[in-house]
Image (cartoon, rainbow, N blue to C red; front, side, top):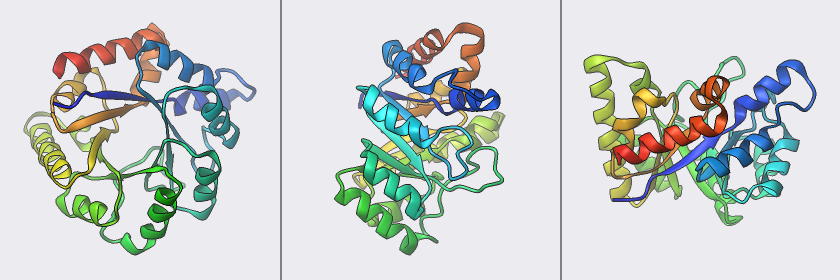
Length: 241
């Protein structure tokens, strides 16, 4: 069974900062705390409208942290240029709509294969690992492999928001998708909406090697502190594994 890594998304530390303006709270400080608390990587989403993370944050994170940096980005020329300049460990290409509050689903890699192809190729040529954020569907996984992506990150939002038999059905989709991903030689990650209550069954899937969790941890940190929130998530992940 693969070891299970925890990537901590620090976007919403920047959301709180931007609500008031100024420099506090600092997402770079949050990343350093996350590293001390047991995170294996840091994720940040540089959105086109800069609603939370800023360009300066990305450069500061790259310079300040020893952990791998996972840059979530839309497939646009602007974001590609920033990625090539900052050289994060990995870039996770995600769908992005200006009006959405958060990422609402996976990329349609099948439909957008031709458009995504040059972005994947340029990132790979620069030595950056490429992750595609997709729904747990076989066609999306197979096309991601055909594009030579390094990683697929399975969207867990439908599972996390479902209940009862609906949640069980979504979990089975994620299990099947992770099995196919490993069979095809793709590293399998998962994320979106994961909480203490939903992490166990996902963490127990042996083919998944990384969970990326953000909003819940930042929210929980209001009540317990960031380091204890991350440590508790790490504990639950390890127990399920």
